Length: 250
Ligand code: PEP
Image (cartoon, rainbow, N blue to C red; front, side, top):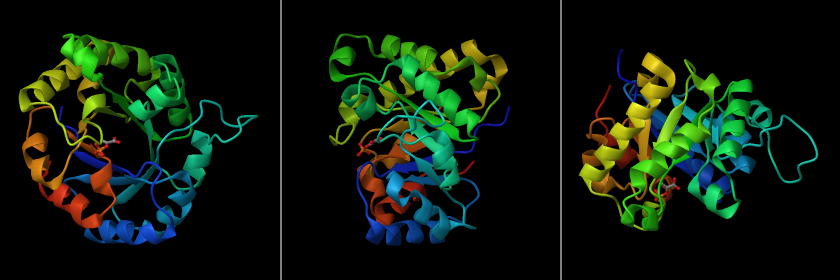
């Protein structure tokens, strides 16, 4: 099976008003190389405008979360169908800021992944251990457990992506050793193959957590690292594009 096309996705989190669209336009203008997929996941309020402004370019647009239901009495939530109508092609699910801050369980993430498929969105499902879990030697068990719990069976054969994001590396400037990243990515791939058979070879496995222009190339060159999920460094086109420049082309 051919290796998945690398994906570099930016997570703007709760950052960005209309003025920030200038960064998306600059990224879209540079997104011409078919060897790497590029995506930005802005706040829901910017999704429709961003999708319109980058329409016709290679920059994909995604949401940062969705509700499991298509509609209903869920004040403040946004459904996968709403994201798709606003122009999203992807959606980040199970980010550690949502698992920790909003008590999202693996089962809740799996239900959201099913909702994303229902709406025609490609889920980017995030997993990752805390600092304490790594220090206790439980990183592999935690991450593979999250994979088994957060990925519904119906993902088999569908387009989806996994992002390994150690909680302690997000927004801290800290990153695991290259050996540790490789070890976890291999364990994720083995788990995907066990769950989905040959189809488990297809999804890209992204690394996320303090990816910057200065460390991107060495991380992106690792075996089984199929791209990056980038937080802070995705807010400025120059930083994001410098990260993209370090990606090996498919
Ligand atoms: C993230 O929020 O997914 C992330 C990886 O953030 P940062 O790149 O800022 O560590």
